[in-house]
Image (cartoon, rainbow over all chains, first blue to last red; front, side, top):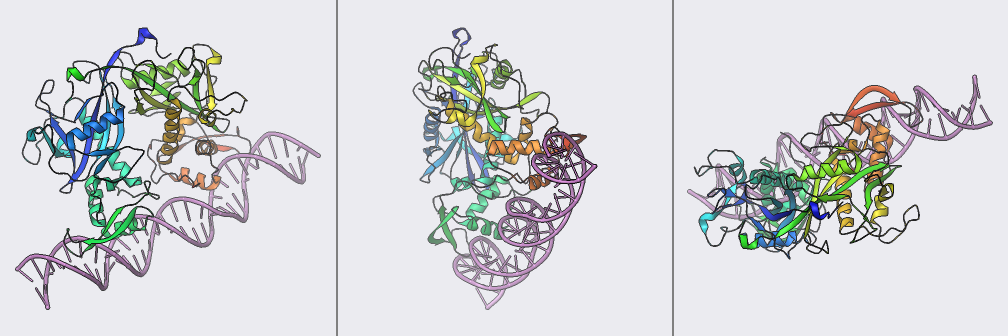
Length: 252
Length: 252
DNA sequence: GTGTTTATCGTCAGGCAGACGACTATGATC
DNA sequence: GATCATAGTCGTCTGCCTGACGATAAACAC
């Protein structure tokens, strides 16, 4: 029975962002430092309120632009500019997830190529890329020796769900190319898979698989030696979005 | 910057349900007839407001119980009682999706075995199981000759997303068993796949596949002839939730 | 030149899926 | 009771894909 006025209760609705990238062979997420209570000083996922005249995906794209300068693609128009992939992840609405009031957060997942430094209102100390293991491990120490306090609110859960979504989605879609610059080599794409899955892949079998899947990669004709060694062919992402058969994630 | 008071705006938050089942070899969804404007008299998905002290999954489970009498399983505790599978689907928040006010709807997907007649406050005319094609085709006529008006709000989109989720999820998980009674035969499970995917599957290859996947099916020892023909072994759903390698949906 | 690094091509064996034949066990019909 | 229709179950065969891994190619460092 929708819209019984007696049952209506107002909620605050926010979007939170899991922004993932691959830096230095590690899967990293964007974290911002909270400047106010609750969880003041703790790291959190970027996010903010949905405005009254905004769609959820618009709000997520706006937040992404504000935090990273990235222009997001709508899920309907997947393309490859200097933008990121953006999709809805899940919605979190536990009554106690924010101690102050009832907040429902629609989390979104963004996949971006390696970027320059993050910007959060120009304050370099208030935003960073951090390896997801550092953000998710409870109470340990990050690789730079910094105390790794748990993320604010339920953001550890949200980040964990986002990472799991990314790990499974690159199996059966061409989304791994969203972590790459517009032109990339097979080796660079392989290192994306290795970083996201945390495994080592056989370069020969990987090469055979991705070049043999129709529509996955399109050669641009150029080559590069930016990785050292023999020059590698450059590719762009092809039109295919679904990989059939999928990439197989090694067991264990 | 979460929680800037100047940006806060109140929203109404609802849950809508895509409840799917297989009846008479067809994938069907639960639809309720709206008794009040807007879209009065049109069919819609069941749903309602989230209460102030309720989690989203609790609200979805409550609505499911109110509409069908089904007891839902939490996603964390997948089991097989006389309950249904329930999971979050996606969230819909277009500013114009409800003409009266800003409503954000967290849609959930429920998969249930074939049930007796639906109940919606005892009013038999206000709830029904309808084949999803009938509900999704715009302006045509259903199989019973009834005018098939489009679903209210954006519920056609929600239903379509839910069906697509179910279609893809039975590929790589054991969720198809959620459409079956606690004990079922391989043939009954195959007819579930055929109804959800809308294809015909080879009974011999299907039998080899499902009985050969460890943890998918557990024989109970009993047999049945309720489908006619040679008696078939009865199975329960095994502990495995992910199928590896997955069931392959035939092309075209 | 020698060694190192990365890219790319080839080969081979094992596993799985699709196509399909064969046989079994029940109820329905003549 | 014989026959038929129906549904279930077991096998076989072939082709494709994957994992393991050898071999060669083309750059750079020394």
